[in-house]
Length: 229
Image (tube, rainbow, N blue to C red; front, side, top):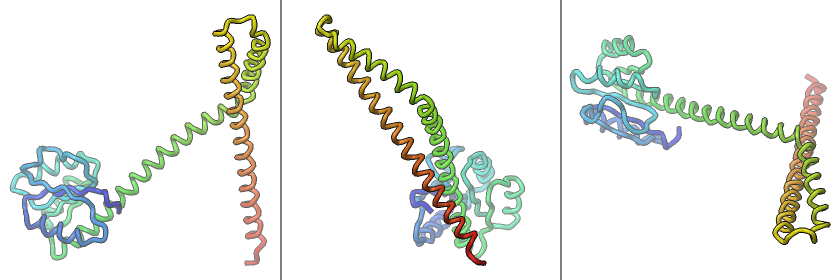
């Protein structure tokens, strides 16, 4: 579990909060905590958090809090005093996790909370991986376009270089400003030509490396296929 994860605790029972925090902070890696009473809860949980734990609250406030938290995408654990309350919450809010406050409830809560935080961590990693895959796909498309057109670009640059060199050979008939501009065109075209040559070299190097990797994989597969069972 990532240490930067934050758990939001909503409760009006100071002893509940004190006991839970004291036990949770004994864990090898404990998350950060944001604690608020129902008086501070304004109908929506403010601030960043990854998991919400709802403890004992004052009469008449539980339904409002559960309704507000049920619209959030984060996992929510609700600790209730009786099994009847737990069953009622499960029936009305199936997305929320209801836990009865029996003997040893803190250990049960920590087990459940740690699993929720692990799932949050995996979800974040998956989202980052999907974003990286999308970015790589875009880069691959751009790279493929450059590969497909590198010869055309090189030919165009060669033409620009050739014409710039012809003009430079007859530079005496131009003004100093024109000669400077022609020289700049020549230098920039030459630099772009060098970049394209390097781009082509990298493409060849990648193809050689890919073929080498495929050959190595093929040899290993062949050895496994020939090994006696």
